[in-house]
Length: 175
Image 1: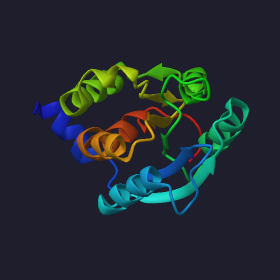
Image 2: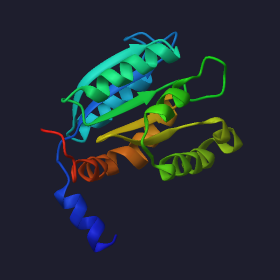
Image 3: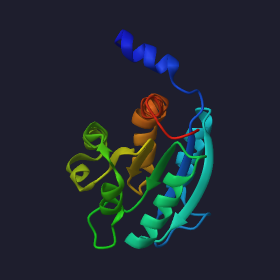
Image 4: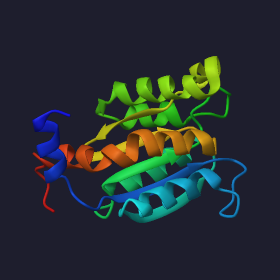
């Protein structure tokens, strides 16, 4: 690891405040295994889950929920699960793409590469995406619990403090 990356990681916040948004027409708090995995892994890493919600896979509802979370001062990052496929009801990608100012192409690329190692060519069906919306980080994961765990363990848990550090670095709004 390069010295500058290591210095940035050292300066990164120890605790990130994360909102978890499950997008699903069928999940309930009892059956939301993907959302539960995000909460579990974030908390195990020492982060705070400041908000948790399930919203129907409906573009206007998703947008309202996301805008509310992105405007919340108690949220550094929003992680969604669900709605990233290609069926007619999958609209998370379209909504989030409109709200992201700076897309982190490497997130989707690496996620699909890691997925390919596990599930083969079906990885091309994922439209997992991440980026910055203002000074907040947004990551959209598939609804599959295995896919959520893969993204969380390999990409988000190790890197989310550094991402939040970078987004806070030159922030102009009042904290």
